[in-house]
Length: 313
Image (cartoon, rainbow, N blue to C red; front, top):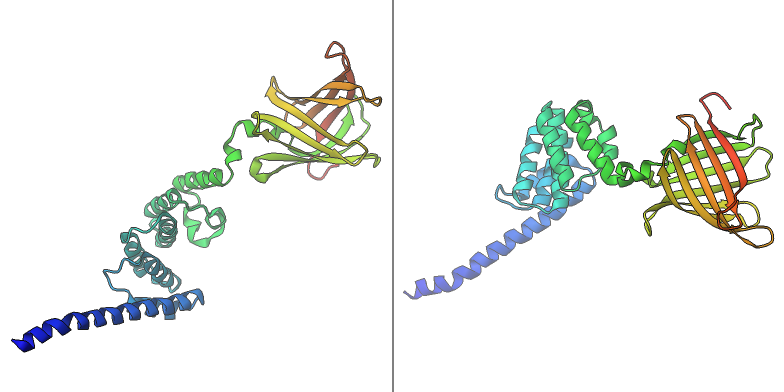
């Protein structure tokens, strides 16, 4: 009876010691496996992860890394099994995105297109947004003509570049391009302008250079969050060369801004600044001011932009 009582006293301590030893072994083993993983020693990491991961382990990160080792070693079915174990651990969304995207690659390599596309869709739902990988990785080569893949790619693209899906942000795209600029109604070249879409389609950058070198400047054109209307901020290389054009709205085939400025004597002027969309290869830029509150108007400048075709200046 005394021996039995002694056993009951000692047994919990023995079990705890075994548990702690196993936990320390597992923790140390995972660290060693991780070290091999980050060194891209796929064979060594694979063996170490297999050694420390029990089938019941819920270490989703370790299962994911084992799957990636198997993938790099060409063991595709083993990789899929490891990724499935990673998902069974109910990992957080960022890890789910990684696991689903990696499993999608393996399924694509196996020619299982529908399953791969489905996994990729799940990956994007959890935050996967590696557009460069989708566009260039050989693993996804078999998917790129698939309609489902194209839809997912477009969704990722618009997630990364929300302005590209914004109809208002696309209103000024008719001005994008490289242009020869002439005083309207003449054949006299006044300058060149390069208008670029920048910031993921959220803005247009104008680069102006006069032919005779008399002026140069840049403008940034974007939707002002304060009022939801277009705004242009122009910076020229001349005195008092900063000007803001505001309240831009596209209607009746033209982008129309208003502005305030002063004349040479410092008297206030109101202004209208208009870009007429005249088709795929032609834009008219018209600026006029009024010194009497809009009763009469004086043209400040009137230019016609003709798109430069490839190989022509």
